[in-house]
Amino acid sequence: MNRQTNLAELRRRFPLDFVWGVATSAFQIEGAARADGKGPSIWDEFCRVPGAIADGSNGDVACDHYHRLESDLDLIAHLGVRAYRFSISWPRIQPAGSGAVNEAGIAFYERLVDGLLARNIQPYATLYHWDLPAELQRRHGGWRARETAERFADYAQLVAGRLGDRIVSIATHNEPWVTAVLGHERGVFAPGVRDRRVAYQVAHHVLVSHGLALQAIRATSSKAEIGIVLNLSPVYPATDSELDAAHARLEDGRLVRWYMDALFKGGYPPDILEHLGTDAPAALPGDAELIAQPVDFVGVNYYNPTVSSSANAALPASSGAAVTDMGWEVAPQSLAELLLRLDRDYELPPLFITENGAAYQDDVVGGRVDDEQRRQYIESHLVAVADAIARGVDVRGYFVWSLMDNFEWAEGYRKRFGIVHVDYPTQRRTLKSSGLWYQALLTIPA
Ligand code: FCB
Image (tube, rainbow, N blue to C red; front, side, top):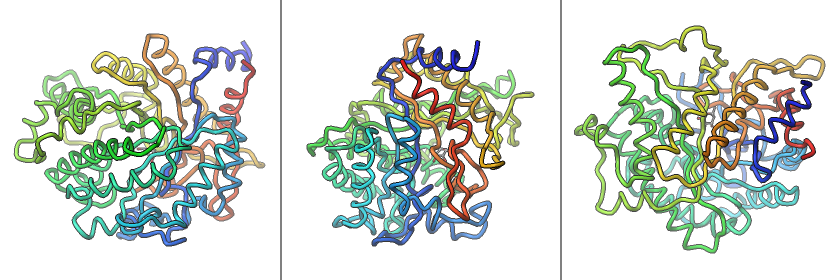
């Protein structure tokens, strides 16, 4: 079988109206950190904490996407994708997190959305991909205060009011687990807090803000589908000991059930509430119903399985497994397993794989980047998605993370996830061989 046949066969495993896309987020690509009245975000500030970012970098310039919008839109169109998932920077829209719209800031997203539509690409927007206006953090501790959830609903309404007639899909949050746990329990992401009680209060307020935003968006004339994006994975015990099994069950509760049960079963999992004890969040009457309002879709971000151990040591990937440059195990079958489990355990709206991809060290050699490992990663995960669809899971789309190399949070620019290579000193973009392969898959005649 030649490669072309393989491609055609793979493509035929997906419905004709399947949404093929690529994804990015504002802070990771835009740069222009102070342009046109943008206020600072908690990530602008976190980058200035000595030691917070592995290479000491920040998002001031990133991929300079803000100033290269038109040529980046051409690049996205060149890939042949039907959809582009991006996030909106809240401090560009409201520099201090509340009050009037910063017109110059929203104008950028108007150009982005109109530029996508002009190229026949559907805009999939995310309202919060971690760049909280720093002023809200300063004023009342950001997400630890319920007030931030209220401000978020105002912001959601502003965006939906201005762009909701053209955006196809609005996700309220990207990966609330990361905001809560990496940002407030482990402190490795902005705002760098280490306090489990605060982390769970934050997790609750983020979900409350999702519920308030749903109501606020639905009060506008926006036609966009509305949902939320979660980072989910199967959790496997490191050994077959009872202790590890119990540990994995807790980890699954903290990563998957906390969010999925709240959104689709109307309450937090009792075993996790019991485990948290006095660290469980304070909630108001009605919060559970607010959070569990119907959504139009759920976005699943999947990279690798989670291995959970009761021993408090760093875990190697399970024996001999291939790992990416992040040290993350390559396990496509875990994606199929995850999707089947979600389908079995919950009454779900349509699913989208809103992020999937891999970091590898890439070199430009003679104008080309041969990233066969990334191509294989994407291909094998698409096979897993096709398997899940064949077994009845309603997956409507797939977005590669990422369109281009970018600022990988606490890792800085050292980890490259793009199917387009970015040479940061010159900002030159080079389509990697994985990108050429994806383009071939998407543009194959039906
Ligand atoms: C996800 C984030 C995304 C990117 C990938 C690698 O958790 O949503 O911004 O950093 O990981």
